[in-house]
Image (cartoon, rainbow, N blue to C red; front, side, top):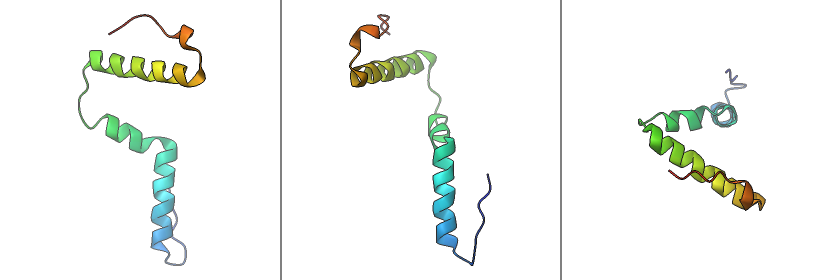
Length: 68
């Protein structure tokens, strides 16, 4: 990833850098890897996210029935 500072406008370059890191998912990955997460907790978090997505879509019957 590369950000160019033009005409000494450092603040704009920082904003562009932040935007690019968010778009590429670097910030999310760093926060996710900050602490170790047990595999069972990871499955529980992913299942909860799937349930919330399905509720948002309005299709609650396609949620996997396995509970952790």
